[in-house]
Length: 385
Ligand SMILES: *Cc1c(COP(=O)(O)O)cnc(C)c1O
Image (cartoon, rainbow, N blue to C red; front, side, top):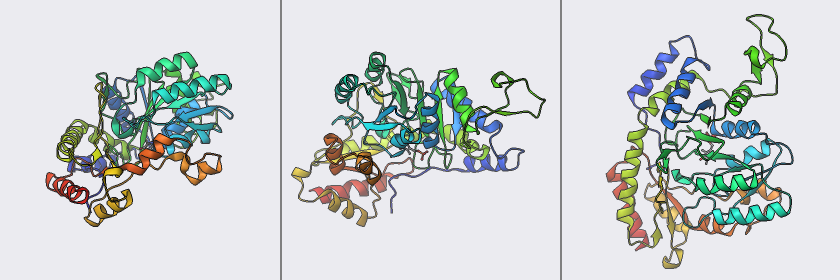
């Protein structure tokens, strides 16, 4: 089976892990810090905090920005559930902004309308999480301008987007957000097996996330409520978690990061190849905003079902039968049973639900061979003819 996504591990990755295994630190140590500074260099953010997943990064970023019980968090319904769950962890109410039919990212027009309504109802969000679906940045300038008018904080869920650019600046620079979050899950652009990171330019937010990463414990006398008892002394000054990344993961991350550019180059090449070869079929190829350079995490096609005799499910199954590991990103979050129980309804976000019926992600990863890609293209041509 050709998978829809796959990590790319080489001997250099393996060697760097072995080196850590033979060193003094296995848990969070100097390699984690080193990984953090390397990501800072890559993104031009001021601070980076490595964590054990992007889910943890989203959770702690929400806490650090002060999300509490009774607050509202808004995100896109077309994302992984973690983009919304982080709000629930903090006791907040979660709501969704319908997607743009072209970019599949949250729609600026829907956002404006929803904000205007929320202002009247006194239920403005404290945090909005734009998700850069498939690696293409959301329209951050517009979202940032709205945040100045309506007073919300912004966390970019850039789980798909490390290595991408927006107006020629690297995603992660946080020019138009309070925090940016990356994921290093194996299907993402670079991996640490499990792992994530929060980036910010705000020192206070960075300190809070760092504190929450490790039980709310500090060894820095500057943050203590009384003077230190000695070198052994630490204080728990808030309730935190164990969300630490370890040095083994960070070593893999550093090694992977050094190949990020070449990974993305290959993803772009394969994406363009899909674009060219799928032209003329009854489907829509991924539309690209002129001021974004997508990291091309996913290649999502939208089927023109009116012009095709088969259903999306039949097409999906036919591709699977040909050993092509297609996938669907994503099932709208508000239609998940957990969210239905919270009161959400089918039909509530029509663009997201229409998108869900028509979308298929084709295999895309640096190791995908042109021969296998040809097989995918030719099979699609046969099925859709
Ligand atoms: C993968 C993903 C996450 C969660 O990442 P983990 O590192 O697995 O916790 C969150 N948001 C989006 C958009 C993702 O794709």
